[in-house]
Image (cartoon, rainbow, N blue to C red; front, top):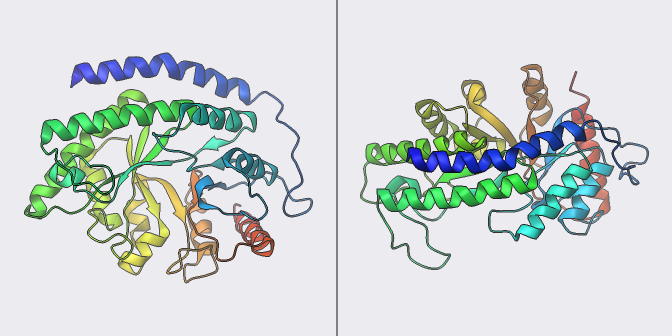
Length: 330
């Protein structure tokens, strides 16, 4: 394993150093002029690091184009970050074009949903996921480690190309025939393995607990379960993606926020139970965003909501909502 880590780390150094230099020089360069914003005259940078997920179709009426068009739209409207632009299986030329766009507009790249397995007992029972619609047939500690290493190598290459640092990972489903204790140990061992590779390459993995109503039989179904693994792994390159919607849907509250605070790497925003934009459900986002800002959080706040109505009026309403939220950053 040490040899594998060494090889991966060496590869990372060869590619990451130019990226660091680009980041330093980008801060000094003049960014392109902004286009017409959705809210007339309102295009100053957001203080909070809201990061729209490019694949979600938010603001689709006002910006019906592709990912590159959306990146420019976010820049024109004052966003300083973007996320969810591609996966490790996306064409490399597309990855490079995304990387060039975020560099051109000075945006930070948030998390990509790269290894968030939902259908196989991947880490719980050491089962290698099969293509959709086919039954998994590879199972065992050596087999799952080889699979995880191979997938992580692809994820790391993607992140280097798009100038990202974080990605979402999951353990998969609960495993039939294995006790909770056995599953926990498998998940812990596999998560440690992945975290070590992340540390050697300078990236951070985010465990995202999902609710059982949306994702039946998923292993990470509460923030507490993810927190237990993060604490046991004890590696700063293994953190939590705190999704307000999933936690509220599963537990009925967001009381876990304070307990998980030191292990949270990023947040996902959508309302409950609608999974649409804030204001369509019962989560008090004004209070939440004010709280985490006052506690010192300055990281990514991902938009992972479906838009309730696809029209320009709703686009404008959503933009105004987040401009109001941004005023809480004092």
